[in-house]
Amino acid sequence: MQINKPRELLRLRIALIIGAVLVLAFMAADLMLLPSSMYELYIFDRLLLQFPIILVVVVLSFWRRFIQHRAYIFAGLLIALSYSNYWLIWVCWEEHSFIFPYEGTILYAFFCVFALGIAFKLALAANVINILGFLGLMWVAPVYGDRVPISMAFVSGSLFICVYARYRLDRSVRMLKETNDRLLKLSKFDPLSDLLNRRALREQSEKLLALSKRHKVSMAVMMLDLDDFKKYNDCFGHQQGDEAIKIQARIMKQVFKRETDILGRYGGEEFIVVLSDIQKEQVEKHCDALLNKWKEAALEHAQDAKHPLMSCSIGVVFAKSAENMSIDCLIDEADKALYEAKEKGKAQFVLNQAQYLE
Image (cartoon, rainbow, N blue to C red):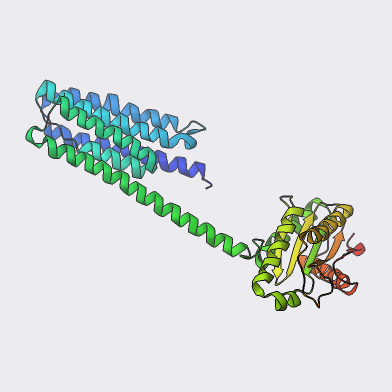
């Protein structure tokens, strides 16, 4: 998936700033509850540990490869903030016998995972490390007395819920993307042949034609039609007819391999190929290759068909310059050439060079 890097970076920096502001807001609230003897310790943790950690991440956001590595950086941020909070809880207990709340650990997790967008696997790894850290803290410093077991369960459960929610969200986003990709493919591709459908074929062909005119390069349009396809369908059934269409599409993909080559199903058993910046001799070779691959396929035809094996006829229009032409005009010319190929006995190609286009 393509990422708009400037917007994504701006969003992430805003999220980090919001996080820093929230830390300041909690500082104001916490200082109202803490005894004055602990102000220095608390301010040291927040302003000289947590703020520099956030600042380092903000600075890293200007690194040109930050977007690619942001998930690992944010996972590290989550672990660093959580353990700085554990240190504060431990020192408050050891030196001042003060019970500092653990809720910040949960807020850090939810903020980093959802606001900063840590993906499921890294969120799982980071929160497992944080759960183990909290369990270790409770082992060496039972800060919360008889509430240690429930505190351990609450923190572990909250971080687990955070990770599971991330999993559900990632799964939903992935399913939505897959659905959108399928819908996009259905809107552009013919489901039977997996070639461009008629609408997408026309759109792509018009773009290629405009590009050819701009660069003053040659243009060729080929129209292919399976010979006596109705007789084949009547003899072998529509399912086998569908297989013949698939074979035609597969042959076309084997012959035309350039990224600029446009392949589409025009309708029924008719197919179109649109080529740009190509020589007439190359087009003729492509036509021969298409006919030869049908011979190699050796697909038995209906008894009353023109030829014993399935084949296709090809009509081609070639123009050294299509300056004054539309894609509809080129397709019409290719259709006329196809009609000539059919009239001459099928299983062959006719190439008309559009002299008046030059």
